[in-house]
Amino acid sequence: MKDQILKEGPESRKGYANLLCDFMFKRLFGSEANKDVLIAFLNMVLEDADIVGVDFITTEHLGLTEEDRKVIFDISCRCGDGRTFIIEMQNGYQRYFRERALYYTTYPINDQGRSARERFLKMHAESGAKFKWDYDLKPVIVVAILNFRFDHVADWPAERYHSSYRLLEDHTYEPMTDALRFVFLELGRFKKQVWELETMYEKWLYLLRHMHELEVVPEKFTDPLFRRLFLLAEIGKFTPSEYEQYAKSLENMGDYLNIINTAAEDAEKRGLEKGRAEGLAEGLAEGRAEGLAEGRSEAQHEIVRKLKSLGVAIETIVEATGLDRETVEAM
Image 1 (cartoon, rainbow, N blue to C red):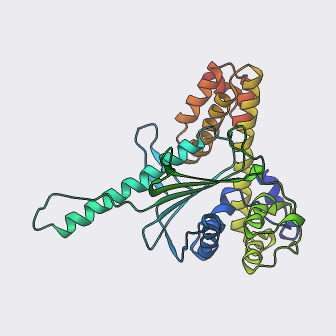
Image 2: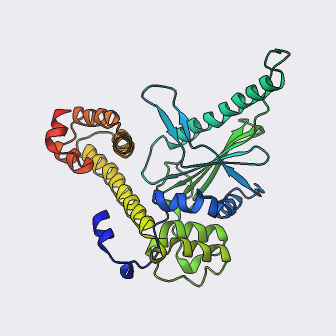
Image 3: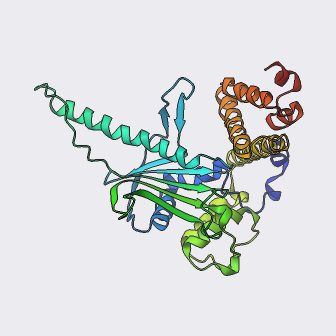
């Protein structure tokens, strides 16, 4: 796919980019030049956030085990009052994504304790006072854009695409703390057509799902912010370097989804539980994306071995991973 895209001349590069690929997602929400776009998006999704400015912070954290060497967020930022925001984009289905989001919050929470300790020791360097902290945690908020649908309770409205979770008491629903919040946007549940769009939120979700399908700017998108989004996503205005990065990002996104879908379908045919199959496929996809990119293929090899042990066809693994048959058979 990438080579075919790169062969196209600038005159044929028309239309708008897919906002869900990694390159475009970070171009819109993770760059200093477009920080105002991120702020506007967060204020819209969180409603009462009242964010004026943010500073980007590290997205890479050391994992807890040798196998989990790094945890990398898509985008992470902090505003002046100490609130931390983690913004994630997940294209492929992941059964335990809620748990993954919870796990992610442990890192900025631990960072608060570490920073408090460093400040205390610096302030009391001469006295040698013992570290004390009152655990005054600043909120950590996860906003996840999901290109799939969660498995909700039976009576969950099919069209309800926004869900927000906090820690509440079981009976009175009294908040235990405002230090944790999780907001999930399920694009798979958003079905409105362009002529049905009314709110800014709906227009945002529509562009996240359909920007790459548009040839012209619809009349509904007159707001200056949306005009800006269309300019940022206009493929014809990409530099050669940006275009190559976009093409590679699209290729990775296609490979990722293909791995998940192919392995899960094959496993289902063989009677493997759907969720388990998709979980293994998810690991295989991430193993390929991270292992090949960073030269760490051991995680990918382990997933391939697990798929083989569960009876997934060699041909399926070869097709999904891009590895040759001899390599797969040798694992």
